[in-house]
Amino acid sequence: MKGLEHTFAETGAKVNLLLNELEEEGHHPETVLSGAMTALLTRLIVRSPDNLSLLTELSHAMKKATILVAVMEAEDEAIH
Image 1 (cartoon, rainbow, N blue to C red):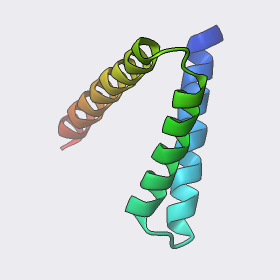
Image 2: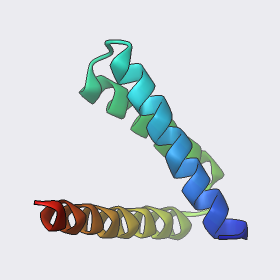
Image 3: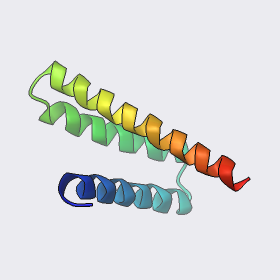
Image 4: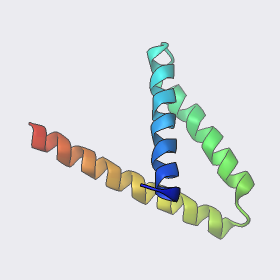
């Protein structure tokens, strides 16, 4: 992986590590997710030049998340 793909993967890994760390410290999992999502959405809204760009980014993120979940579920089924 190079460039943008590497940055995408590294960012996702680091965010997941932080979320895990907060949960392991005893913070409520739903509150951790809510705080993270609020921070990310705030940053996205501030940095988006217009509503179309904002919605496009949200759509892409949701699509990638859906694909990742499907892969994780398929791997889990293959193990069992």
